Structures are given as structure tokens and as C-alpha cells.
Image (cartoon, rainbow, N blue to C red):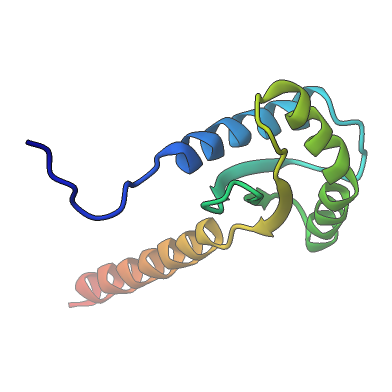
Amino acid sequence: MSQVVGPKISHRPNRMADLIRQEIATFLINGVKNDRIGFVTITEVKMTADLQTARVYYTSYGSEKQQDESAHGLEESSHKIRAHLGKVLRMRYTPKLEFFVDKGLEHSYKIQNLLGSVNKKDEAKKDDE
């Protein structure tokens, strides 16, 4: 006797997101020819449940101007990246790509620096006592 417990949960969006992240990262290193894209790391891809849209999160290093250039370069190259994904991945529909700056790492660095400065102040107080 089988039981049905709630709706079936599909792991396919997560698997596709991982594949897309790997392919985009490789393509940025080896395939895309856009000088505007600087040092960019693809940190995460989130797929919608219908697999129609891939939200690509990335970090970009360098000055603010270089980061802006990288953002524009990714947007310019999105059609090339999407075409590459269409060739490599076996999907009925190649998802639309949306690029977002991943603020998570930036926030963690700020927190780490703040904690480091608090620790230094505590150590300085202990030395004065």
C-alpha cells in the first residue's frame, strides 16, 4: 500500500542550476571574448521551478569602475552564454539568464573586518590594564 504525502518535490531545478553554474564559469574562462568582463566568479545559480529563468549570482573583483564594466560585459555576452548553454545542455528550452551581483561575500568581509577591529580594541584594553 502506497501513501501520497504532499506534492512531489523535484530536484531537477537544483541539478540544472549546478550544471549551468559550472558551464557559465567554464565558458567565461575559455569561451567568451569580451574584454569588459574582468575577474568574475559565478557563486550561485537559482532556477525557477519551470526552468525558464536562471538567476546567475556572481562576484566581481577590482575597482568600482571595473566591476561596472564586468556587469555590462556579462549583460552584453548573455546571448552568447545562453547559446553555449543551448549547445551543451540537453534541455527543451534554454533558460533566460539574469545576472545579479552576489552581495553575500562582500557583507561577510565587512563583518569579518568589524569583528577583527573589535578584537584588536579588546586586546589593546587588556594590554593597558
